[in-house]
Picture 1 (cartoon, rainbow, N blue to C red):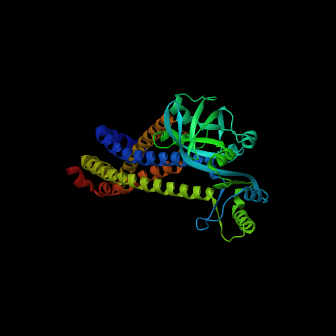
Picture 2: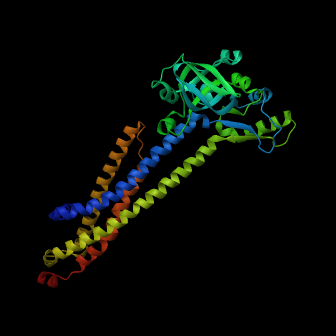
Picture 3: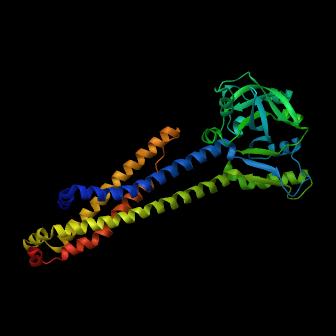
Amino acid sequence: MTITKSLVNIFRSKTRSLLTMAGTAVGVFAVVLISTVGAVGTSEVSKTLVTMGVDTLLIQSAENVVSVKLTDNDVSAVREIDGVDDVMPLMASMTEAKMLSRRLDCYVWGVDKSADRLISLQAKHGRLINNSDTAARARVCVIDEQFALKSYGRSNIVGKKLSMFLGGKYHEFEIIGVAQSGLSSLQGMLANIMPGFMYIPITTMQGLCGRTTYDKIAVKLTDMNSDQAIVSKITERLDLINHCTDGYICNNLLSQKGQLDDILTIVTTALSLVAGISLVVSGISVMTTMMMSVGERTREIGIKKAIGARKRDICAEFLAESIILTLMGSVAGISAGLLVSGVGCLIAAVPFSVNVGSLLISATASAAIGAVFGAYPAAKAAGLKPAEALRM
């Protein structure tokens, strides 16, 4: 009954009520939009990092031990350790490629057949690097889809040739595959900033660069939860066979991804709290609206009290009215926030993700603000004396 009366009173002055709801809606909209964008962003970054191979261990020589190098013996030693699922040596270099008389910056990776597992490469056209390519030191390459689009304007350019600058001169390579990688989504968003990526047999890269060593070794574990014990085994084994102490660094990139997730969550929460300040501002407009309502309905309050209405009945009616005002504004703000976020995700071609917790917090906070800022007008209305109210 109280709710019905409150709704009737709210729509007595539709324009004023709608403006009050709009104030609350704007605040809730900002909070929902920021939290949803944060949830989607965090999810996409996590997925991208995992597909880039962040769920692996990355071994490299310590910077202060210049004499330590990674060799085939090291790769074999790591492969024999219990708990290691797969191992891949890596080389990487920033260089330049020429295609169709165009010079394009690219980041070339020396990989072997395990690239599809450790850095989640998927062949969209053609194939990936295999054992035969590595054994023959073939001058073949796999390029990412963004690089193909930049050069030819289409993704399938299998069989085309390019020249890549390695070891002090240009070398011709045949494109055997166009791949999608964990970096594809980032390259799509940062097409003018990030270079194209190419993958060639690691033996070919060693030969052209005049090296027999590797830059890093990527290690995939059977169980990433046991990484601490295995990290110790790996570094101890490598130090032992190379007769050194603390000569190797083994990074668990998955733990670093967790730290990045925590940072993104903190940033999203901080921005949501800043946006939530507008909810407090909207509470002032709720109080103003309710005070005006009390002034306009003074005689009505006097009549209700004269026929037996108690203070708590009058107080409950006005308090319910202020809470309903903020809740209706909150629903409008949540709906608008989800709609805009959904459209944005559709345009960006990323999965839509909702932070349900932030929606519940926004709705609860708006109701609480309605109760707090509506308390004084409700108390004032309940405190009016019938005789004085009827004379006004």
